[in-house]
Image 1: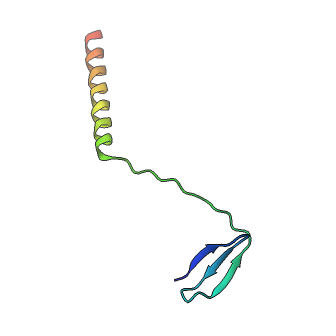
Image 2: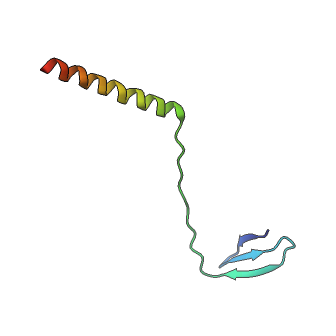
Image 3: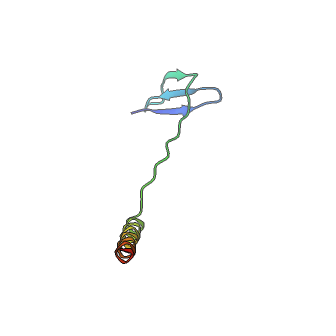
Amino acid sequence: MGQIIKTDEHYEYQQEDGEITARFPNIDEKMELSHEGIQAYKTIFYILIGLGLLYLLIVFAYVH
């Protein structure tokens, strides 16, 4: 499998043996952001949501 190499003005596709087989003058570089949550934060989040719901249930029970 080859690789894409950036030269001064364009990109070139280079084979494993070093032969350049394609030139790309107009390639837009795009970046992708990704995020993976940490399990501890998810657990804390769900505990806090549960406590908030429990609080609301207690408040509404005593209002009536």
